[in-house]
Amino acid sequence: MQDKQNLAADRALQTGGQARGTQRRLCRVVRGLTLAGAVSLVLIPAWFWLSPDWVADVGPNLPGMMGHPVKVDGRALMLGALGSLPIIAVGLVMLWQLWQLFGHYLAGRVFTRDTLAALRGFALAMTLTAVLLPFQRTAMILALTLGNPVGQRLLVFTVDWQDYLLVLMGAVLTAMVSVMGEAVKLAEENSSFV
Image (cartoon, rainbow, N blue to C red; front, side):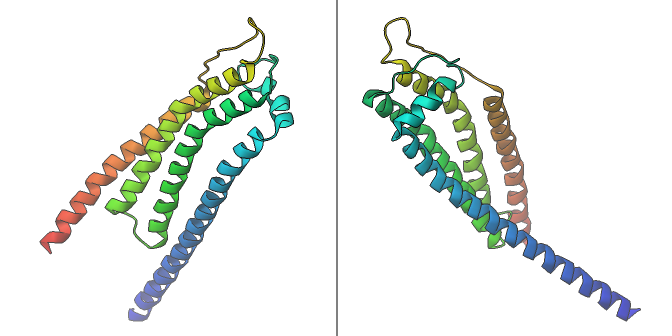
């Protein structure tokens, strides 16, 4: 009987070790994707706004443009790049929070105040991204049509399904952080009684 219990305990330890190994690999993958995302978030918009031909090709196909003509000049490129900066900044904050969160997970810190703070920061940045995206689209459309003659300039404000989903996901994550925060407080209180 004792041998069966020892065998079961050994299997549980091996399974737990395999799960921890899988979790550690997943944490490293997510951190790698986060790093790649941060590099892309900086380089691709810069490359886009420094490539007038690319802007002229993509501009008329932006949501809300409906093939409207664009005027790609220095002012349009500068205003478009400036209009992209807030969403890039919030995106970098969001990715930094994700980097921090999975760093904590990688170190084995799952339900701590630090992990909750990182998850809360990620959720808030995601929600802020959803709020900023329609304004960024408006700024881009305005920048690309500002050089057009009077009557051909556009001021378009669009909110789409993806914006709603980002707000919803941010709200869900914020609620989860709140519940997890209560669990962490209870665990800390219980550990102080021992």
